[in-house]
Length: 360
Image (cartoon, rainbow, N blue to C red):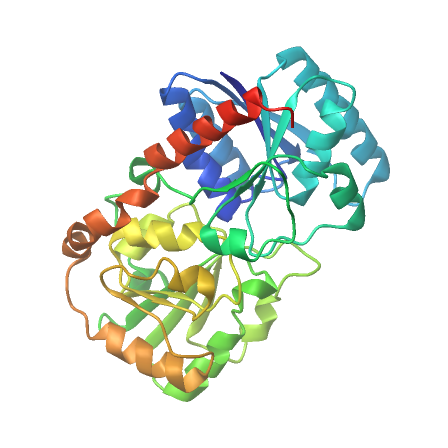
């Protein structure tokens, strides 16, 4: 099968890291896979992800769209349409709202099948996208995303996100205590994801105020990409909250850390959490349906509510866990098998075949 995936950017994040696992897996299962990236590469990490996928026989094409540039928007839409016409894929699978738009315009007047993956719970679309994508086949990244959907189609399915441990797990160890000049007895609590409001990183300040423990250091791995993101200046008055920026060594950081923390207010099926599961690090996850649905895993704690006191108590309890990450992973193995990328890929291909036989 010839498959084209389209995503907005390669700056890191759940969608990009999911594709980093899914696309090479589809290649390994015998499919011809191309990734079209809409926005130009403006961070070294973009090229890093490109290199990883290319090394695993995924063809990567960057359209080079410039932000807030209408002329660039038009040029890249036409270029995308031309490239897709040249490839002539069996399936076009888009990921996130901008890529859905590109996918729509690329199939106008052509006998091509366009599948949209919904990566948030819920994923909010502008009115024009609802009109363009009316009744297109939909894949929801989790049961929570399906249950909270704002879209409907005559052909839709829930397929849990998955990851490839071979890609996301490293045996390397990065000790942030050395990098940040901390004491060897200090505890490292890691959060992963860009500084979008939904990640709720400002809530960590309330946790710090509640815990009043200078030996606990909260380290955020994620970038700020401009308007709409949380400013790193938010944390200037908190010496034990560290914004590390976009990192390509998250697994190695988690290997040297004590706890993974997510304060997110909503997710799809969070890839960063799955990565933490496969890295064997203890996890404290916010009490949202998307976490509760996947939280029945060894060494995972979920506070009762979004109260700083509840989070503080839960973090204290989780930090008592002194089991090695390798042992935690072994204990989790049977529980997290369903999040392996091999299973996810099989379900994706099965749905593509269903779409190919349908009139959608």
